[in-house]
Image 1 (cartoon, rainbow, N blue to C red):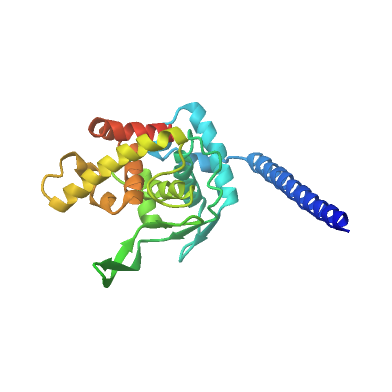
Image 2 (tube, rainbow, N blue to C red):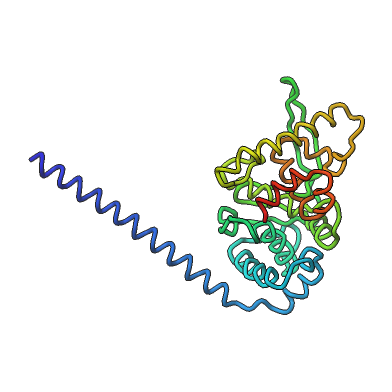
Length: 272
């Protein structure tokens, strides 16, 4: 009787195991089949004309341009773009997808932001409410929101995103928010994206050093020196620091390398 029970239990466990294996391989087959169908879609001349206006695209070599076009096709065909008080255009999709895919063009992260499902686009900055806690005293205030990210949704204000995308300057809100998305990949936005195990210690040492120095400079509010190029907002927390220095890495790489060679080196190791 007992042997029949264990035999039945074994059969159930084997059945469950086989079912999981079947589901895994079916999902992998379905995902690969869908990917191949997407990559067969044409990358239209209209798409190319949009890319040609982007300074960061112009800086890529021929191989990288071809590579990122494939990533853009996957991105725009696997994410939902939702417009709030505006109609989503191909320009919006291509500009956002390009900068998102630029971050992972040479990284070891193979997924095209698999956890991300939706990009919400507002025409202009959004007035949002924020509750802050200072020593147990809670205050509520309003602030202007250019972008926001969670693990499955990115929110962008198109006016600012477009302005940043078409002109190499200090800031780039699209890069900023998608750096947060990379940070979320290991489950928590803490300023440390997924890294090879051997790289975590050095990454934490370098970024913590510059983050803490930036916080001290902000608190003293005297001579900002080289930290002026990173800016006060990056001192909010480690996650914002990583997102801001990611902007500087792509927008002002030579300047970042000159003033923060070790920080630049860590970002170079990650973004490649």
